[in-house]
Image (tube, rainbow, N blue to C red):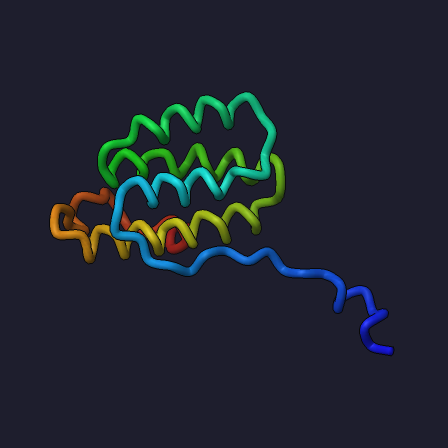
Length: 113
């Protein structure tokens, strides 16, 4: 009887909660955040993501990513996705031997809003 209720059939989107220690996987996480958006700006953002060589490059693309997500979904979804990326980025710089947290200019975006 309860299985007929609408919220039982709805599945929440699941995001990978894995910690990443390779730059390629981190870039892939950023691409996954906008994978459901069809927009010409996404193509340019994809090219910029492929050109990223260090965490600081990804850090500066977060604003463009946030704007694109909030344009096609809502600001709440954008905050959720960007804060998830912030966590992965902070884990990466805290645990990768070649990078330090001081490379990133400021705190996570979720704390700024």
